[in-house]
Length: 177
Image 1 (cartoon, rainbow, N blue to C red):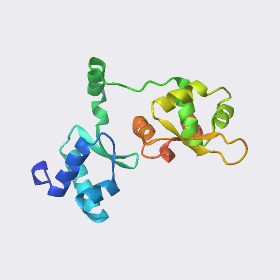
Image 2 (cartoon, rainbow, N blue to C red):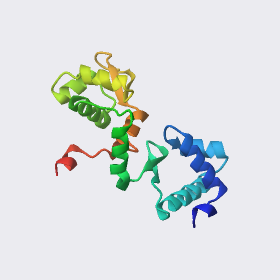
Image 3 (cartoon, rainbow, N blue to C red):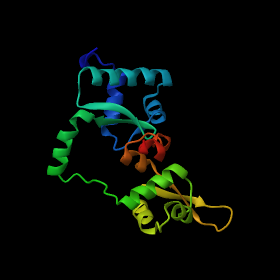
Image 4 (cartoon, one colour):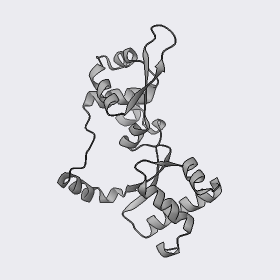
């Protein structure tokens, strides 16, 4: 199958994903297009197949619970050169902020004192940065003990780190091997 033979449904999905600034959930696609899960799966597979077989610069990926276009990994050098030459805004995090985000992602929901205890240092500043960037948010208060705020990761966290689900984050033991 080639691009000119793509179904109308796949073309519509392509257009919706192209204009969306964030991943589009299957529910959103089904509701917008008035289709069922089977029809959506067939159209997603068709679009993905076309992008793969015709060696497009983009690929279809399930990310953060929704579908999104992403550039192909083999084009990373070209993308890197473009980013360096342009004013594309990147999220820059300190080692402490990355470590704090990882703790929250793996153990959420948890309080700041629990984060501090796991890290062994004060996490106030990195936590404030993560909140400012919208990578984590509060999700209520702890019921027992002191009613401290609970922190969880956000959809933006998943998108920023390029993962579909926090369960996709490897355990520390896996990274050390």
